[in-house]
Every structure is written in C-alpha cells, then in structure tokens.
Length: 268
Image (cartoon, rainbow, N blue to C red; front, side, top):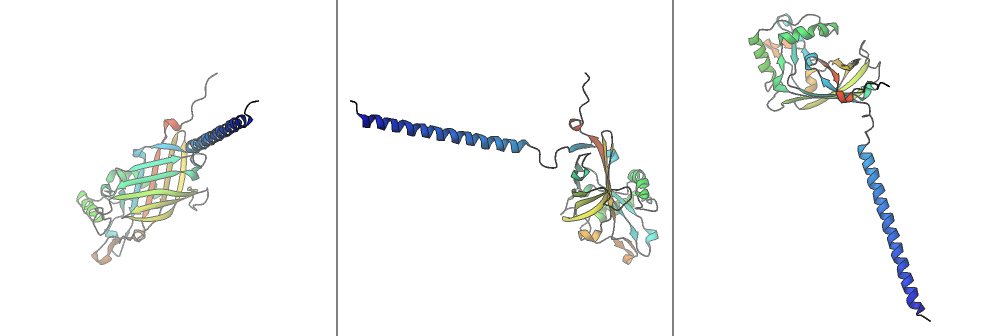
C-alpha cells in the first residue's frame, strides 16, 4: 500500500493552488470590468452637451457693444456713445433643438475698445434705434475728441486697463421661451460680465435665429456703471455726464461648423 497521507497532502496543495488561480482570475475579470466602465464613462458625452454644435463666428456680422446715455443739465451739449470690443475671442455652442443649452464665452482686451467709430455707428444704429435703446442718431465726434474720450475711459478712474486688462462675459443660464418679457426676444439670458475685475450677473433679453446653417444670437439689457463700482464720467460739475445705466448690445452670428452639419442623405 502507498503512503496515503502523502497523497492526501498533494491533493490538498492542488486544491489550494486551483483556488488561488480562480481568485486571481476573478480579480483580473473585476479589474477589466472597472477599466471598461471607466472608459465608457470617459467617452460618453456629458449631459446637455449632446446635440450642441460650435458656431464659426462671422465678425463682420457680430458685435459686443455698450451704448452710454448722456445726462446732466447740459446734456444737449454732450453725446451718446457707442463703445465696441475688438480683437476679441469668443466661443458659441448652440443646439437648435435646445437653445437653453447654449454655451457662450467672450474675452476682449479692454485697451482695444473702440469709441464712436463712424462705421460702427452707421452699421449698428438702425437696429439699436429699432430696439428703443436710442431715440436719436449718434452724433459725429471729431477724431481728436474720440481720442480724449478713449483716454478718459481707459484711465485709472474708469476701466483702469493697466490693472484690469480683460473684459469677459459668459452665459450662465437661459430660461425658456416667453420668459424675457420683451417682444421678439423670447428668452431670458443670464450673463456673467466681468469689468475692472468685478464679476456681475445680469439678466438680458435674448433671441436665437436659424437660417439653414446660419445661427444668430442677439441680446440686450441695461446694467449700470455702479454695478461694477465705476463712477460714470462727469464734467462741468456734473452738468455734462454719462447716465449711470447703460445698454449692453450683443450680436454673434455665424455658421455651424462643417463637422456639426448633418451629412447629406445618401442616394440609393
């Protein structure tokens, strides 16, 4: 007869080894599942991002502008001013089926603002008047006076561009159709605006238009200089000055990026 205790020991060792192998296999499968789930989550689009398309901005058809309003006892001697941003960076992502998911971010150098540019005044006054922002055309401001206005605007007493070189804006919320209370502007758009380093949220009236692959976002509202702790310009002991409220007028238009456009139907 053989040594049964030795055979039993060998059988026990084999069972232990087989058990360890099965444990290692289960661990490997578990790790593989964890990795697979992680990869699936990483590539799956975030909620609200599905369907949004980037818009290639047409700068000739777009503007980020401020309209100031003259005030004071001698206001008839003053001008309403149009200030527009230049050299800006902007991203606009839009879902035609869900405008409430619109993403918009804007940055512009404060030192590159343009004041009372005659071409911009001519281009944008008709729409500004149509919206009731102004009731009279912008006055012609000589180049020398425009330079003085610009110097005052970027000085430490106003925008202080040396310490606060960037103006920013972004959409932080869009509520559904009919919420703005402004005819023709069915959306209420919550904008976060940063000027002189101070960030303020304001609700403006907004609208989105689509014509084929063209998208147009237009909005306007009425913040105030003191919202940003800026003292409005004043001269002649306040007889000539800018009113505290001003109008923000924004238009960004462009075409859906080619990668975002639907592919043409295949012919059978």
